[in-house]
Length: 185
Image (cartoon, rainbow, N blue to C red; front, side):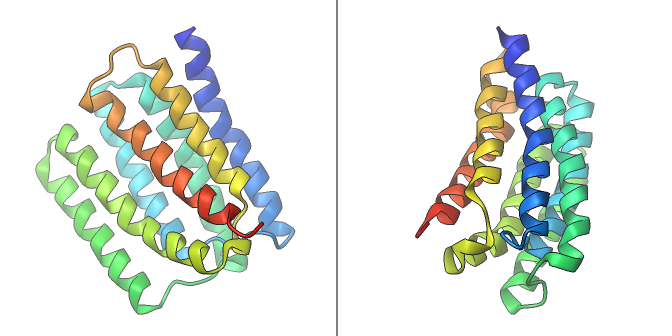
């Protein structure tokens, strides 16, 4: 059963960007450029940290999410919004600080926590944007990614702080944005 959950948790992040990119092209979603840049950078670092931990179930969802991040980042140039507001720059700097500490630790366990902190700081511009303009995001995209996190947790052979922290974060951050995007719909 855990193998099925793992397959589903890695498949959903393949499906969700297709839905999201279609919504971008249809004018239903406008990804935040700062967030998308940070997601790409932290995605690279998270995937490398999980690879070095040999945390294969969580590595699978992270690697798939990295491909997703790259595709959406490219679309954010033409169809996105934001990127240079003071709050965007502050969040970007906080993310870069988190990524720097992540790399300075040379410890994949601590690095994962710094990576999550950096990713969260990068998510703040999208959270603010979605709170103010819920019509600029579709809830389905984020709900699918939150569900992938839930399935990834169910697939874990061993549940401890090292294995569960990233998928729990994915559930929380994506769930929050999905709820904000569903507001007033």
